[in-house]
Amino acid sequence: METLKKNIILLGDGATGKTSLVRRFVTDQFSDKYMTTLGSKVTKKDMYFKPDTGQKHVILLIWDILGQRGYQYTQALSFGGIEGALLVSDVTRGDTLQSLKDYWIPSLLSISGAMPMVFLGNKSDLQAQAEFGERELNNLAREYDPCNLRKQVFLTSSKDGFNVEAVFTELAEAILRNTESARLNYTQYIIDKTEINNLKDALDRIIADFTDQFGGPANAGPVIERQILQVGLDLDNPTKREMVELVNALAGIEERFKPGHVVSMNRTKRLYLVNLF
Image (cartoon, rainbow, N blue to C red; front, top):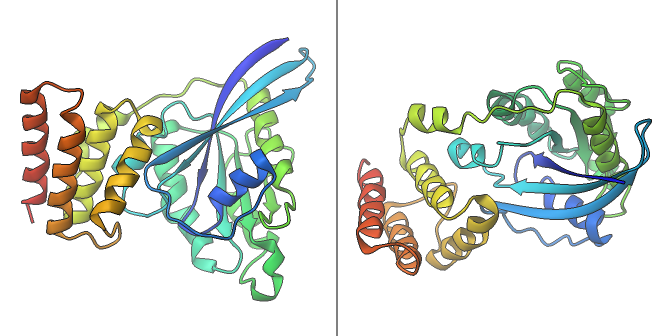
């Protein structure tokens, strides 16, 4: 039996239920406690398929990334090598559907190119509060190449498990059917071209710089999350004081595994970004 590793990503605004969807799929558990995902978290799930070419064991690596808009540089570090995406909106918040079109899909496609994408209207158990449904999801999905998807739109509920396994299975099968698996990583291009216009842009670049030097999002994500929580930094409205504290905290971590001159250089360039504003 052939074993394949496939990377997929969940994209969408904060509080749409991405982390709960992953938890429901992998552990069949639900938690309604909301906590902002800082950095990236990667979860593994073993799946088995029997396509025409023979039985396959798929190790599905599920990336759940920072849900705040405006951190394109940090988020872009997670896009390299992604082969399929779940675009998650919250049916009780119409703005989350528009956000997929305006922000998340363009951000992903500009880095990774065309790929299978499944559109989710999550929290379908809250129908009485719904601001949109399957029709609006289909209208958005039709604007993008289905990449050999049998079904591209689902209403889901991480609370009761409705359609959760179905969306992951459909995406994984679509990836297996998709003959174009090569993905270009334009991370360096984005690094060179990123404009820094405010403190949030500067924070984005600082987080991404640390992430790149700490072995990637999977390794750096939990470390960054812990430091941001300790500093009390607000990702939506960071202050210079909070960012200086974060830079110093990250330098303290780097002192454990990097030469002193490298730590000093990293700290200096990150503080320079903070002091632009």
